[in-house]
Image (cartoon, rainbow, N blue to C red; front, side, top):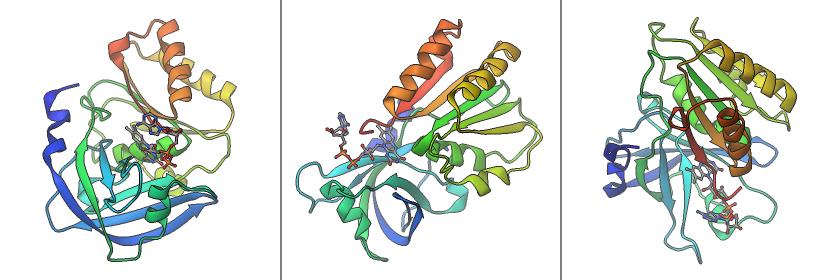
Length: 229
Ligand SMILES: Cc1cc2nc3c(=O)[nH]c(=O)nc-3n(C[C@H](O)[C@H](O)[C@H](O)COP(=O)(O)OP(=O)(O)OC[C@H]3O[C@@H](n4cnc5c(N)ncnc54)[C@H](O)[C@@H]3O)c2cc1C
């Protein structure tokens, strides 16, 4: 973590909704635009605010898009009995506004010259989409993506699978044993890799504990638990 990972906390952006789409079952995508130029590292997140909502007026969402795409994209699960915040989000109409503080966060690839493992569980794929979209060269060390989704929804699958970069290998996995095997193969192959984990807190804990048990140093494991799931 560095100071620059948090400077975005002083930036308040008014975002205008430009697109709302149901991706699968209970997962929705929202796209926004801003009059201000917003900069962020692929993988960072924002605090999204509705002042008019009762109780907790904000939620944290990772930005699934890159700054080059020129839009703020988020994806989130909205179930049958949503929180007041998510109900408000779901009912947003095109051109309505939401406030975003940020972006901030430390879950981004800072060194492309070492091997990197990008590990996502379910909705935790949002930063991984952004990180993959941001890669625009093959002059990098190997990157492997381990995207586990036991519900087999695989959000953004077509877009992610379409990424053609000789240095990027992507595994879509719906089985925990296969996930463990593939990650173990990566661990054994690369001694100096970094591991980025994104997903629900329980999944992060399991993957992190397993890496540490297998002698991966704590400072090589970067993670963002999606607190709230
Ligand atoms: C770094 C980060 C990135 C995230 N990115 C995404 C994303 O891209 N997409 C996405 O869908 N979600 C993301 N989340 C989770 C998101 O902020 C919401 O918490 C989640 O979507 C559930 O919201 P909700 O309104 O449905 O439920 P909530 O009303 O928020 O509550 C669900 C349960 O979690 C508890 N809870 C929620 N937030 C906290 C908290 N901060 N501390 C302690 N307990 C809490 C509540 O008390 C409740 O029991 C992210 C969270 C973090 C921290």
